[in-house]
Image (tube, rainbow, N blue to C red; front, side, top):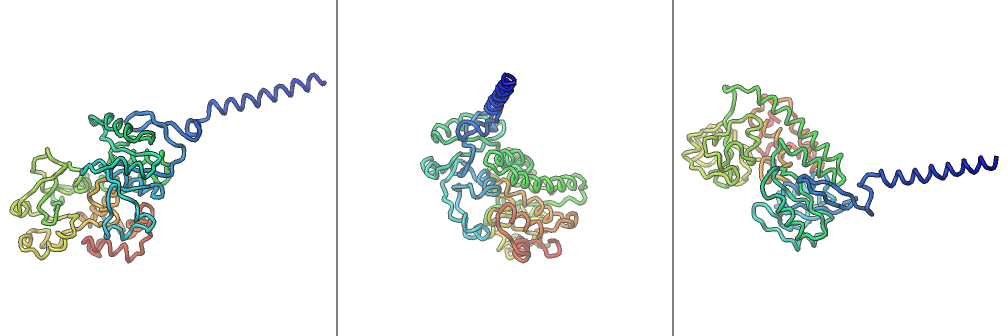
Length: 368
């Protein structure tokens, strides 16, 4: 009997040892290596990052915008300065985030300032399949030293942004909020793609994107800056312009805009919008005569452009209502705006605040 008891005890000890060994060998990498985990970024690099991230920065505004939308408490710096008007709907705890520049457009990033912000990781934007991305990321990594650099696919195209949002959400510990943002995006993408595919030539509206305080710069189709026009089925009047330059845009003449005579004008420039209805040069254009000029809402990020990125997700239903209000009468823009600001801009709007944002953009009250 005693011998049998010893055998049972030995078996129990063996099972306990095997259980511990199984735990050690099979536990995922996300909880091993003394508080770090190994990930594969979106360029295929294996990167070791802290298991828990408290401070994150990105090298460009589109990536920074995603972080702000899904985990603002983890964003330790910006690549830009919010203007006073943009700060209107920014919660007070985020208004003082420092601007450390970045590597996009102006190329004004400062490695010293990035490092001084003490991030746990740096997120670097890459062009999917683009040349030179690996060397750029490796250069960043060499400059940032022990701070891990994680490469994430470009987030400037609304139709392709989902995978990058989900990836960022997963690595920074905000997967649920990232999924919520993707669900919002997909809901309106699916609706506008379905309805735009059914538009006939007879009911397609022509649209001009007026850039700058004189409105005489624009972007053709297939440009990320005017992508929402294409997405909802508007006909960009600048389609005839050389399609080779979709990044910097084109200067056009007043005569050219008059000859295009667009049904709708969209702008992101408040100065242009404030004067267009009183400018005799624009007076005979259909969009002006019919009060069909619209200003992208500005705060805390523009809905239509600049930056191009996840901030344009709310611009999808707005642009649809701007160009084709009758086809999208089922969308309640006051409710949509309140939902988006609460969930992703971390600011609870009243009905009246949401209404004023929309009326200020030029939407007619009957079309809200």
